[in-house]
Length: 294
Image 1 (cartoon, helix red, strand yellow):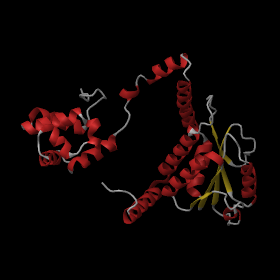
Image 2 (cartoon, one colour):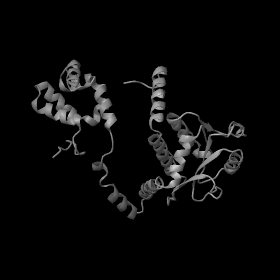
Image 3 (tube, one colour):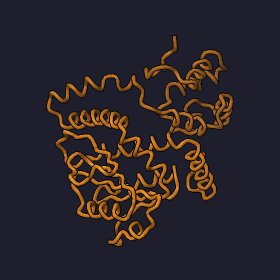
Image 4 (cartoon, helix red, strand yellow):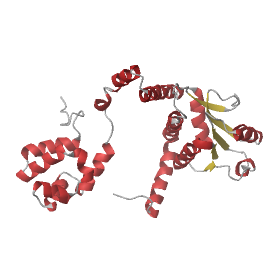
């Protein structure tokens, strides 16, 4: 039988098992430190070796030596390990369905929205099993160049998708339309190109025009929209967002989730080419120091 975490969050992690063993068999100082870490894992982001030593009347060096014995390069090493494995476990969400049902019966709008979003995620998963999904992933991987366009308040979500897609493959450009002509697409050789057009809820007047002109110029088209769109034709690949029942103003969780799932599928199906691309980007990030290294 696997021991449970002392805070009731489910099975012990490797770190917690090591701490429990040390709390039982270590030196007096090690036992005190192990018990402190077991009881305060959630608060470690706010601690330093000096602050822990002060609370236990030990030197910061003693704290650091203890952590090295556990295999960590100081307190930052332990924090990184905990951050990498941090997740919401089933133990933490087991009561959620009952809570939502109760709050729905009491007419709480937030419970209604959250329930609708959970159902939407299930419908998106079903969509990922459809032929259109496989076709969309194939288009995103096979195209020589990918252009992404969107409008109004979903432009930010679409731009983020384009930037994430650029981690998995090259030749990705976001069209903001600020030049008023889309000449970078429409005056571009169409061989091997794909336009991803994202438009839903309140449809931009430019969407239909851009889609029509792109197809006429010979570009492949992938449309991400909803069931109320009346212009997305059967002659192009279309991913349709599931309908929602939410009574709130624009809710774009389903769009963000669809694009996130689509990105995951591209990474999974891209195989070694995606891996080589991400490794090269990681090397460049290290070279230019874009991210802090711990």
